[in-house]
Length: 187
Image 1 (spheres, rainbow, N blue to C red):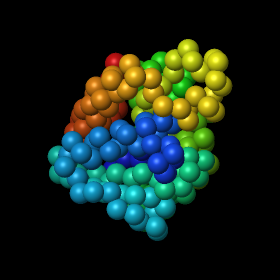
Image 2 (image 1 turned 135 degrees about the horizontal axis):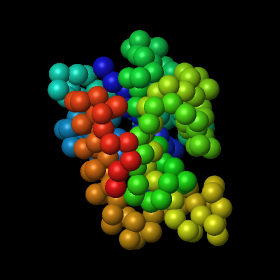
Image 3 (image 1 turned 30 degrees about the vertical axis):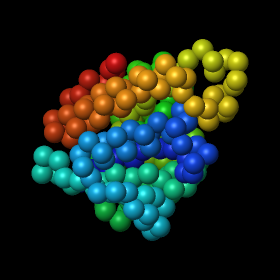
Image 4 (image 1 turned 45 degrees about the vertical axis):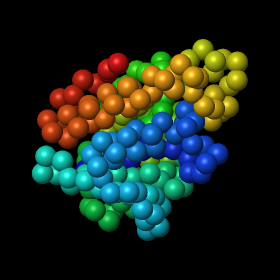
């Protein structure tokens, strides 16, 4: 069993913002795998769905806490399903990575991403991170906080579907072959 967590902030105000690219990726994966619709699961502080892939149960989670408290949702699911951290894969934005690049690795720091910081604080560092680059030069003029809460440019929005598809393909390859065998930097 794997738990795949897409990070973002709940509510219409944050929909389609750079900070919610983790939600977008997990929704894209759910759609591609024809998973049942996400349902509210208060005991997990999240919306959840699942599908089976290559004989393995895959849980998909979108925390309903705000980004800074994402760890509560991950911890609740980890404890309930008795998961090892290596079976937890977290998809998040990263403004230090150029828009469209994706980096996969296990462990490490949060890189200043508050959702990852919350998860690290509650379960430790050794889970897998799938970081989707959202960075561009406009961060210099608006500042990090405003940047992550802003929407993608029209050009970026047009490219986002392809980025999410490639990310989903790599995730499915990781489920099948082991995430450690997947290219850890792509696009």
